[in-house]
Image (cartoon, rainbow, N blue to C red; front, side, top):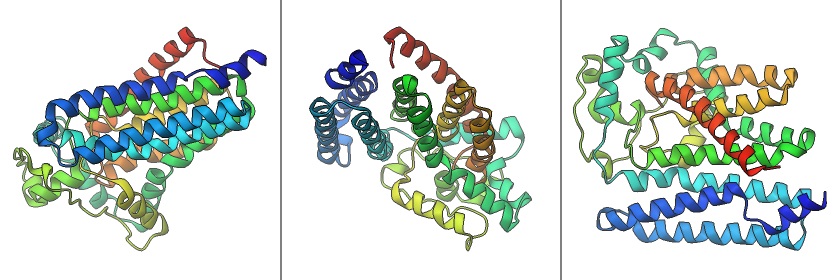
Length: 315
């Protein structure tokens, strides 16, 4: 217990080093692309605020090193993720868009655009609500797994929080150098008539100055549809489509749940995970190949981070 208390009090956590490393990486990119960035000063100030908040959380734990302060510190790091996601767009929009490549691969693999057709094949209001519920459950699933480890498997809380937080930054690192927006942005920019005809033009730097997206399909009066709209309006940007971090991170979450060996936890989370995987395509957020890549990379990211956690002997 004393060793754990000292760990809470003194150390910069492994997850925090990951965040610091990501900030350093993006600062290098910003220095290279500074003249082409749209909001470079705001991006720089955001990183400064992140470091200040992380420092404040570290000081808080030094002042009173206990379980509650540890939970507050992890919660603070999780909340910072909402700043980094839209920031990937601020970095990668200076690069030429690659959606035409991914839409072409999708067409070659399936002979159609499943994201365009999914809602047409399943037009029912109840199905739309299930899909929207699945997508919105992304955030409650994160909270559930962290609280489960905190209250039921505290000795592994450090490992679980490191794996979950770090998984986001693995995906963010890909997103800042891979400008793929996904169907909701690309289909609108091109026109669904051309997409249905199998025409996928190269938009170049279109998304440098455009961020309009298609409305999600389905029952627009549904409760979960409105919840989806709120989450999209709060932070959605034309970025982060390949691989799907929604599928990837929820795969990490499910593997963390499997690690607990709790059948109740697994069975309660599994339906939302399955809905999540399908919903990413249904609501135009991702191509099917994005979701497939999210599944594969989620597994790889999980085992890679678990390996690192064991090497660092996180608790």
